[in-house]
Structure formats: structure tokens, C-alpha cells
Amino acid sequence: MTRPPEFEIDPKTFWEDPYPDLARLRAAAPVAYVPQLDAVLITRRDDISEQEKKTEVFASEQPGGQNEPRDAIAGTAWALLTHPEQLADVQAGRAAWLQAFEEYARWISPIGMSPRRVARDHKLHGVTIAEGARAFLMFGSGNRDERVFAKPDHFDIHQDSSAAISFGAGPHFCAGAWAAKALIAEVALPLLFARLPGLRLAGAVPFGGWAFRGPLNMPVAWG
Image (cartoon, rainbow, N blue to C red; front, top):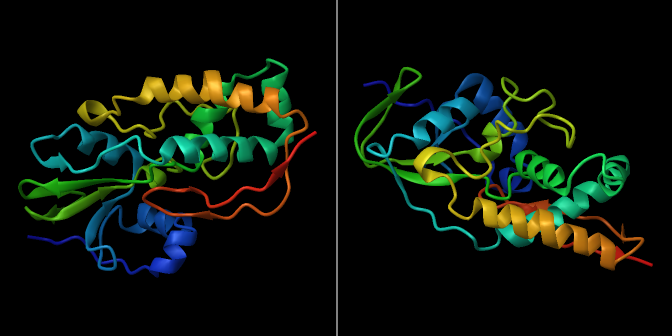
């Protein structure tokens, strides 16, 4: 039995900015054991989408609907404020609030991974993930897969983000996805920019996290 290769990370650096390590994993070791996380990470978009459907192998262990709506609302607002030409497109009706939210959810992935318990030995990319192992389906990596997205590391509401796996896939697709889209794209974002005219950033906006990721604080001003 060939075990997944080991890939070392620095936990602090990974929490601050996981994307460089995730890019290296996608390129060289799409199924790898990370000892600092005690888990096998699956990092390519198509692999994640396919493995999500194998419920006889991967048992879900993750609840949802906790801090991600907060992170998605603040994060999408930040993305639009730092890309004013795209905010102008939305406000002028050349793009929809839903496009902005879905592209942000692809780009940053408020839910960056979903944990699974492996129910039986399972082969993928020539290695065996052992029964009982923890496997992390890395949505934040799959959503930046160079094989799938034209500009994976850039926020662009005009690019096609329909292949994003921000809400999972198959039988593990998030049951609250459409409620979240309605809450954020039809209520929260339009009201935020309508009620706070001249909304702008008033300081640096640090981000953190890789399992759940979002702005840690976001100073703003308006008027």
C-alpha cells in the first residue's frame, strides 16, 4: 500500500495565507498527508467534487451556518471596495450582487475545507488513504485550481465561477446554499451599500484562517 506523501507546513503562515502552500500541493502532491494537521489533504477541484459523492468512503463531520455568513458579507463588501470598478458595474446594473458574492466565495472561500472520516481504504492518484484517516477536502484550494478557472488568484466578477465548490458538491452540497445566496446577494449587500452612502475602507483589513476564512476586523467610514 502506497501512503500519501508528507507535506510540511508552518501552521502560523498557513493560517495567515494558505494559498502558496495549497498551490504547491495542487501541483506536486494533490493527495498529501500534512503532519501539522494530522490529516490527508485533497486539493484539486475535480478530485474534491468527485470524492464528495463517495459517501460510502467519506463520512461528513462538519456542521454549517456558523460564522460563514458574517465572513461572506464583510468579505464581499471588502472585495468590492478594493475593486471600485467592479462595484460600479454592480451599482450600475452591469453585474449582479449575486455575481459578486459567488466570485468572492470562490476567491476566498469562507468555508475553506470540509473534514471527512475515511470509512475504508481508498485509492486516489496512486496512493491509498487508509481506513480511519482524517481527510480534508480543501474547498479553498479547489476554488483556485489553475486547471479550472481563468484567473484563479484574482477577484473578477465577470469571470465564470460556475465550477466553484464553495458550497460543496453532490450529496454533501450545502442545504442552506440558496438561503445564503438570497440573504447575502438580495438583502445584506444591497442594503449595506444603499444605507451607507460613500462607504469606504478606513484602515487595513487583515484576514486569517484556512478552515474558515474571513476579515478579522474591517474599519470603514461613510458619508
